Each structure stands twice: as C-alpha cells, then as structure tokens.
Length: 389
Image 1 (cartoon, rainbow, N blue to C red):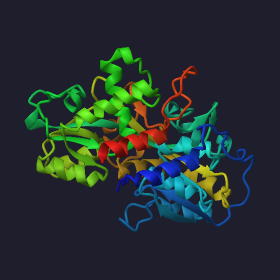
Image 2 (image 1 turned 30 degrees about the vertical axis):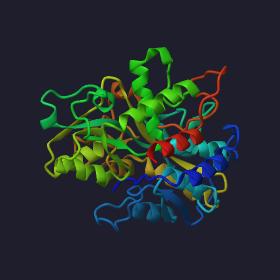
Image 3 (image 1 turned 90 degrees about the vertical axis):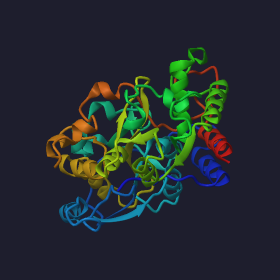
C-alpha cells in the first residue's frame, strides 16, 4: 500500500498552485500554534496517503488506528489523497483537520495559510524524531515547525542485473545519450522530476552553478528542461503508479530507472533479478509531514493523532507496512523485520547527507540567492506538461 501520484491537467494544476501560493510565493502561514490542549472532540478528519491510516480493513493484523481511537475517543475519518496537488486542493476546503503532506505540497500549504505551526511541547513523541528530519525547509519556516515528520525515503536507481554485469554507480545511465540501456529507461512522471535533471547538472555542468535542485533560475531551469527533452530518446516508460514500474521490472521491459526502495523490494519478492543503488551524485527523495489545518475543527484530536502516528509503536508499524524509513528513532527496535531500518537506512545519517528531499520550488530562491528570481512550481508544472504532451 503506497501512494498513487498522478498528474492533473495542466490548467487545473496551474490554477490550483496559484490559488495556494498567491502571486509571489510568499506567506506567513496560518493561525498561531496551539498553546495548550483541551478535551478531545470525539473525531479527527484526515487527508492521507493510502497505507498511512490502516485500521485492519486491508489486513486484520495491520491496525494502528483502532488502538488510537480506543485510547483517545477520537474517531478517525479518512479521505485518501491520490496526489500532492489533490491534497492541497482538499485542504483549501477547510473540512479537514490535518494532512500527510509530501515536500512538494507543504510550502504551498504554508504559503496559503492552510496549515498552522505546531507546538512541539504538546507532542511528547516529537522529542524522539530523528534530528535530521526536524527544522527543514519543507516542514518549517524561520525555525518554526509546521508539522511532525512521518517517514522518509530516497529515490534510487533500480537496474536489471543481467543488463549490468558491473553494478552502476551513477545516474549517467539515465541521461547519457549513449546509455547501454537506451530505450529501456523508466522515468518518474511528475513535475518534481525536473529536480532529478537539475541534480545531474549539479554534478556534470558546474558552470550552471546549481547548488539546490529545487532553486533554479531561468537559465538553470531551461537547461534542466532541455536535458529532460533529450532523455525522452532513452525512455520507454513514464510511471506515476508504483505498480506500473514494478510490473515492468518483473517483465524485464525496463532495464534501469528512477525508483523507490519499496518498489525494488516488491519486484525482488516476485523473483525479479533487480537491485538498486543511491548513485554517487546523490539523489532526490521525500519526507512526509503531518500538518494541522489552520481551520481545524478538532485540533485536540489532531494533536493526539500527530503524537500517536510518530509514537515508536505506530511509526514502526506504518513504516514497515508502507515501505519507508520511520521518523521516530525508537521505532527501529520494534519492526517485525529486524532488517527493516537497515534496508531503508533509517539510522544511517551519512546516507541522507546527499538526499535532496522534495520541496516546493518558489519564486524566492530556496538556495538563498536574492539577486535573481527562481522558477516557481507553476512553471515546473507548465514545462512538464509541455514536455509530456
């Protein structure tokens, strides 16, 4: 059970982003953080990725929602989101108390004032979250946290062992016009993938002076888009649903591609002779954050949920079920598979040093440059849809 990330039509996405971010991509967030907790309201309304709110319906043995409801008296009502863009749109309705937002949605929610800062003092389990996930550009603003980290993962290079007698160690197989697997490359189908092109240019085109793959001025952005245009000659698949890439790996139709570790694990479990690596150039990745709505009608239950979902027990369960590294440092001792945290590098700080987590690109350059404007997410959406047309 993992997320399904599809693309909306170009016009719909552009309108959505403009509504969320306003014209200048700046914002001060929503209301102030809660000062103290009151009585639980009896329910909490969530927007979540599939697999994040299991209550035993999918598998009777997989249930971290029922214990929460029994302990708090908060009934969990869930609307599954199929994409980050859909989640942003749903949060604008004011009907939901919180959302499990990925980094390509969080800044939009903050800028629009749809979410509010959290008060960590009211979330005891926050203290045990890995330090490497706190106070980050995608979940904080000016040192103020806007949610609790849920889990994380890197986008890895998956490859067929038969096609690579010597395992690859570089993203070059995805970008080199002379790639040995030309015509059998699998590409992630999302505007945020432009950052992967920028990451390659960071390593190979120093004259472009890219220091953050989500902070691209017009010249840098144009170079990334041009590279993506050249990559089309190598690609045989653009995937948005994980099952599509998994099937292609298992059939052998795909020889190499950008992937998630969980897809690799599933394909290997079905007999595919594939492996994966985080290349020497580093990688993009994702870190999801539970955020509370600035219009939350059930803030006390939402705080209770945020504390529960990052508790050692619940966080271990969801990380293992979903296929990701947990955010709570105490969760690794509680996974059923004792190798889970090793597989997903949960405790390996060095592994994450060159992972660039998805972040919403804004007109104000995220790398600190003040003398130029960067291309905001609306520009990324327009470019990607033109590229894929």
